[in-house]
Length: 321
Image (cartoon, rainbow, N blue to C red; front, side, top):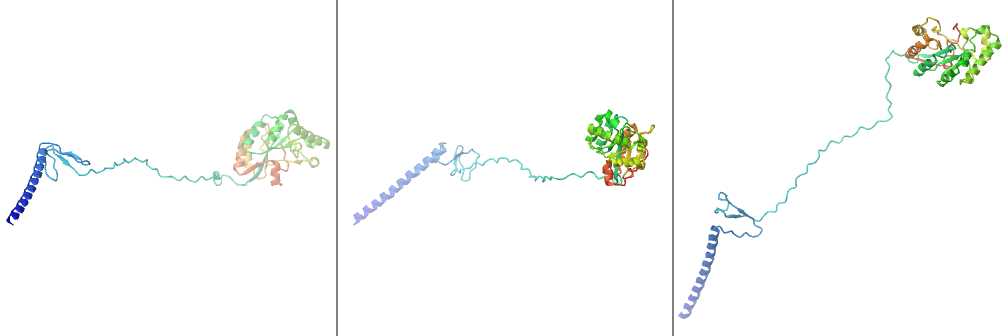
């Protein structure tokens, strides 16, 4: 009994000694690792761990090490690279275009009150042509520049000598009447002679490019009788006189005289007498036109005037050249 007890005690002692030996071996290995680390040996770095060298002045939170020691930090963090922002162009404010307006007509400038008398009434400019054709072109140009239509009373002899003057008058829209063939005093003529004067002039005007027939007639010098009036009507004509004679045909008359005469006398319904070949009438024409238009008068042909004002003061004849 005592022998068994001693054997069990020895066995337990052996187990204690064995554990002590193992403990000493483990402590020796730990001391060896520490000695190697102090001598500068590198410590193995596990995969995925970053070793950061520290200098003598570096400080760590978990304790201090000597020079050359390595600080093992934790598991590395994956850093996603930050994209550099691309500068964007400045956005300009959107401008809504104004809607296009079409179909608008700009109004003409308003005339000053009192400068023009609106609807002052029509007036007819008339030209007796029988002296020469020198001034005709200038007259036609002036009328065209101011968009005026006039009435021309042509002598047959004049047309016969200068047939080229008829077509331009008609082409510009002017009215053509007869001023006889030879410019004779009709109070000295027979009925047959009156008929000849009218018929020959009409034929010459048509031949030269004018209208095929004429209906207006102006007496040479304005000389007439009741008998000649009857003959004229029987031939299909209306005799046309004037109400204003500026006397541009008279020697010594100036353009200023002509303008003053028209300015002093002109009224609605007037028929103004002027002449081709008269320098005074020719020089005054533009001023006369602007004067009458500034007063609001429409300058029209004789036929247009008589259609609007049948009792025109220009119908009764007066003495003229």
